[in-house]
Image (cartoon, rainbow, N blue to C red; front, top):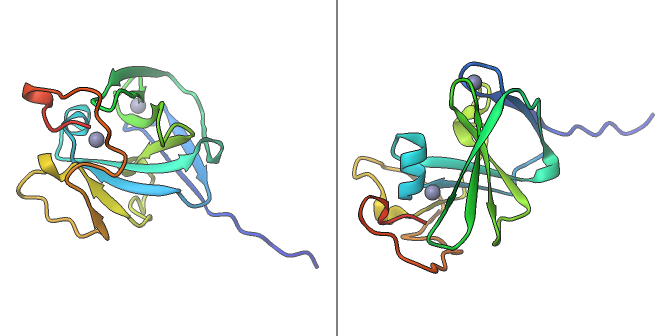
Length: 159
Ligand SMILES: [Zn+2]
Ligand SMILES: [Zn+2]
């Protein structure tokens, strides 16, 4: 009798269902991000990044588009969105510490959606007053924050 190895697999996708993904195994890191970029890209108070090594995630590559922006850290975030309904399902950040990682947007997993443990919250400097989040680590900015410029105005507080 061979040993049965069970690798945890999760599925998810966008609002309209055109973009679907599957993840295998545990994420390397899960962070809640209160930065202004995440607030603007989601239209709400914070983003949830579930970071996997890129080979742990596969997509069906149904109609996607991308949008890239440069952050104060001098790195580029590239969002992968559904071309039809606009849900951001994933993103990458490079160069930098997360360059080999692929983030899955935390609310896009199929139910039970929030199956993972959140390790940290970052950029609490722009956190909404009404957010009461209890996670092991909390940072005003981020342990990998190393800005090459400072944003102003509506992006102030971004990372
Ligand atoms: Zn969609
Ligand atoms: Zn953010």
